[in-house]
Amino acid sequence: MRTRAVAGRWQGLGKALPVLWGVYSGSGKSPYLVCVDLAAGTAKCTCPSRQFPCKHARGLQELDLPDALPPPWVEEWTTRRRREPLDESPEAVERRAKARASRAEARSEAMAGGVAGLSDWLVDVAAAGTASLPGHSAAWWQNIAARMIDAQVPGLASAVTALQETVMRAEPHWTVEAADRLGALHLMTRVQPPWRLGVTVTEESVKSGEGWSDRWIPLMRAESDDGRVRTVRQWAWGRQRREWVVGVRHSAVGAPVPLLPHGQESSAELFPYPGAAPFRVALGELAGSRAPDPIPVAESWRLAIAALEPLIAGDPWTRLLPVSCASVRFAGGHLVDVDQRGVPVRDDSALDLALAITGGAAFDAWGLWDGRTFRLGAVATPGGPPEVVG
Image 1 (tube, rainbow, N blue to C red):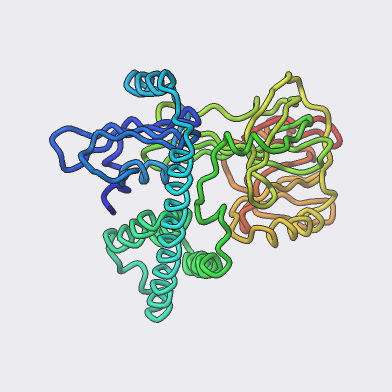
Image 2: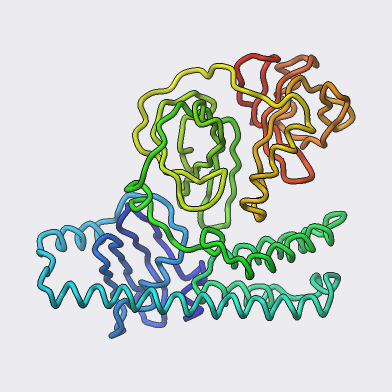
């Protein structure tokens, strides 16, 4: 079943919840059309397998799919299903319940096996030493990542890939970052937080819970591209809740649209996913947007970094954390606060724009902290409304 997790074998992936779909290039002459309806617990695949659901339908549910419009063959299948009434006989209801329980049990066993396999792999890595990691081939890394995908723990696969990228970049002090990521992987195998293992939670189920109505101000964002899907993450401040949340959007074609109008203050209802702060959220109703009013900012870097303690304790695997600091100045590659303490700042277009806007004067800063470098997202005249720069 490992090959079904190889990104190159999937094409035309997408979701319009509760429906997922994709085209899989298998061993047959023609690719398989795979479609899953999460709400109804049904699936369709053109492969010849007699299993239900087949391995392709199960594999599709493990992938992080972009939002998209259903292609004609998906529309045809879902339309035909809507015309066919669901069998609500006691026998059919019991059969579907048993199928769900069987799938849940199978996934639990697969995940436990994957976590155990990664633990053994980490023991081998520790025995060989961090310095041995650059000597391994791409196939060695891909093998363990594929095993995690097969075990239905894509979060662990992503963590292994991030470790590989750290090693391959070979930047100064890469061994320190690699050791940090190895420690995070080890902790993950012991604590096993579902949101980090990659347990799928549908947006539909999230929106069935309690929402948070507030005025949200998104000030920072980060984009990534794994070669198959582009992702944008957006950090927004809730004026009444006084906390940050994260919106995530994916796209297989072009740049994804952020969850909220970036840099604007929007009245909206957001629904939190299971996890830890800052919570990932799904968008409910968006009432309107306007230019933002001033928002709170930490008085110094010492207070800003100290405020991250509960976030790190709640989710020690997070790599980007929202921070702010009042009245900073740029000096020698650092942003220095009123206490003359500074943090390294990323030298990029956001910093250039911030310096152009402020003209060298002190400014309030908001951005993302990765433990080593601050990435600017927004600036303001001290005490004024924020303006997005990144």
